[in-house]
Each structure stands twice: as C-alpha cells, then as structure tokens.
Image (cartoon, rainbow, N blue to C red):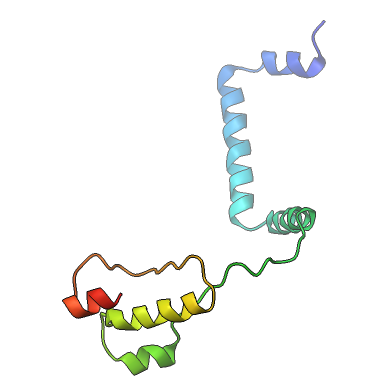
Length: 116
C-alpha cells in the first residue's frame, strides 16, 4: 500500500511537480538572499565554534606593515634590505616560518637581492 502523500504526487501532472519544485527553490533562495536565515546561520556557527572551544596556542603571529612605516619608506617597491631586517628581527624572536604577501619574482639590484 502506498502512502497518501506519494499517491498525491503521482496524481499531479509532471509539469506541476516541476513548477512546484521551482517555486520552492525560488522562495527559499529569495528568503536566503534577503537575510531571513541569518540568525539561524549565526546561531549554528556559534554552536559549532562552541563545540571546538580551546585557547589559542600563540604560535601564529600576523605582522602587518603600518601606515607610519609605509610613509617612512616612501617608495615602491620597497628595498629588499627592509624585508631582510624584518626577517632578521623575526628570526631573533624565534619565528620558525615567515611568509610575505609580496611578489619577489623580479630582480631589484644585486645588493638588495643578496640582503634578502
């Protein structure tokens, strides 16, 4: 014996099922775009973060060039010796990995390249 809901779907014409599915997709998509699920998303995200709650290890540090340093250097690209000084300071502080978000693929001058 088939369930009543299954037989109800079989009595519909195929295009009615497609139209109903498309309407449901558009309705849910519109609601999502308008932010209707934002509170639910935030609640689930907070719950997820709560499950993995732990203290920070302190092993990752992000160092950013501030506006005063940019103004002091006054040129681009910056001399690679500046980056070499940063590497030396971070090495002395005990850094095991240093990553720059800078394109060093082109040569500058041999002295600056050697410094870095």
